[in-house]
Length: 256
Image 1 (spheres, helix red, strand yellow):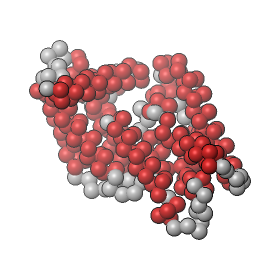
Image 2 (spheres, helix red, strand yellow; image 1 turned 45 degrees about the horizontal axis):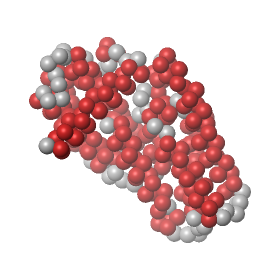
Image 3 (cartoon, rainbow, N blue to C red; image 1 turned 135 degrees about the vertical axis):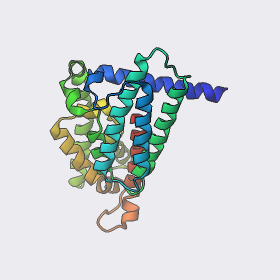
């Protein structure tokens, strides 16, 4: 009984998140590329999209982004249609079917994303490419009202990471405590940037984050007192590899 309650609660959270996102982005049903007349038609389309993903054995980051963005639009259209249908509830069989498909889609995409080693640069590229329709976000009045909070937040954490990188490139000696602080400040941008914060990134900030992501294995190796160029890569890149996989899983869980 408790498990069923938690399961239904999760579905309610998904509904709320989709509705809030649609309102925040100023989306309307007419703007969706998917146009359905009934919830049944929409759920059939969801099954078809899931079937396509199941046929994929591997995917580049660009391909993953395309599939995720397509699913986001399909899910938004489906949920919007269901919310307008007074007969639909989380206990409805069709709604349950849709949530089952959504759960399967999330697992399939996660497995597909992890079929090969992904770097932090890959994770950053995926986040930017799937950040709640970045162009639409930046143009919306709702987003403009909170953009200053995100621009300030993004600027602070990126500048902190840049400062750490500059010190490391200058071979600044670090105490154990400083090393721990630097490690956190270097990782923080990739952990703290949610979907809307990512949408608010400027082109220059994206470029900076991409550079930091590319250099992260070397920067973390220095913090850990290792010589990146002379040490085995399985040692120097172990932390960044683990972090990349963790952040990738966490991000996919948050958006799917």
